[in-house]
Amino acid sequence: MNQPADTIAAIATPPGKGGIGIVRISGPRVSEIMQALFHKQLSPRRAELLPFKNTAGETLDRGIALFFEAPHSYTGEDVLELQGHVGPVVLNLLLQRILELGARLAGPGEFTERAFLNDKMDLAQAEAVIDLIESSSEQGVKAAARSLEGAFSGDVQRLLAKLKHVRMYIEAALDFPEEEIDFLSDAHLHKNVAGLCGEIDSVLESAHQGRLLKEGLSIVILGRPNAGKSSLLNRLAGRDSAIVTEFPGTTRDVLREHIHIDGLPLHIIDTAGLRDSDDPIEQEGVKRAWKEVEKADRVLLLVDNRLGLGPVEERILERIPAMLPVDIIHNKLDLHGEKPFLSKTPRGVVAGLSVKTGEGWQLLTDHLKKSVGYEQTAENQYSARRRHIEALKTVKICVNGAQQRLMEGAGELAAEELRLAQEALSRVTGEFSSDDLLGEIFSNFCIGK
Image 1 (cartoon, rainbow, N blue to C red):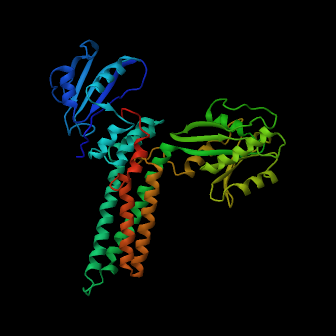
Image 2: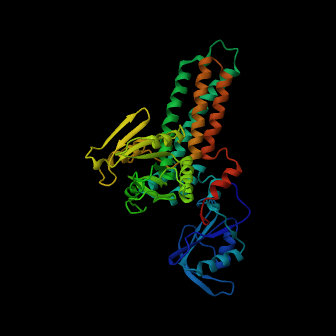
Image 3: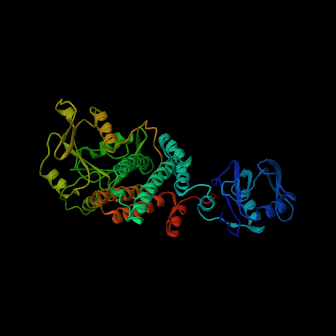
């Protein structure tokens, strides 16, 4: 284990007033602090009701003390948890007493960082801790819990083991070129590499689902004034978030709503109607709309079905980045009694509905879930992040490259591709991690965790 020389302490519960508040202490001086506080050593994993006293011997609070002996603790070090009452002053006084006894204030995520450094969890599991805390849906909680239990890490480790086996086979063949048998053309080797490609795709798909549950999908609503953009935002949000009037140009700024569709988080951005205007405020609104498009995962182009897809919409489509998915939504079908529809065209998906009456609404929501491969009831979901996705994509590219090099008979190049794949995959669990990456990850945690 990587035992630091110092001892850290922090309040592990949110500020406010309540029944229970926890001060957590971890490090080599826990035994010393425990002796100073209680004049005795506590038995590991046995709760005791004790007074918490200040330097003068005055009782600050009375609560539960729990001692976890290394390495059988969250951080892998000696840990002491003091469970008192939550108040704006009492926990701070208790923390101050602990700091006087030789601990220092913990930084954000430092307890979990020590757990990672002491091999109590890998980096993917550590990230799942904050994902679990920040989950905003039941599906997100379940996915984060599976990652925390090691489901994601287990899949990555299995991939690593198979990747190492293939790499070892190739490098062994390269080390013994005097053998008459051409090991690199072995059908079993090619089959293993092909199978590895398929397994990477499976893990990548599960990780993609997990990223959606954590980060959500950013959707920007575009269109000319009075196409029904604000009404669409309100229906998605389930409340009157945006002002809706018959006058064009009502929306001048960007409006945001965070919603869930069957557990899929969506960040919906309503924008100003896109048109030429002499009004400087409206011009700024249009400028901000296009800035949101640059960061979007998807665009809904809303069209007034009475006007159809005209020159205004054509200019909008031309300006949207080519790689950004766009759904063209014909609104106000109810005004002509038309039936809802959804069809695929060379330009993408075109749908018809009525935001006002809700006709065709299910078509749109089902399409949004399907378009990102979201499965509400998938049993293999686990929380994942963009860095995990990027690492797995790199692994896929490298393994595909190795497969191609083997077909060409270039064993040295295949081995190098697999080495790069192994390094990228190891970054997911933290076997290869820079200090900068660790600092970035744990800085997003709350103090006390």
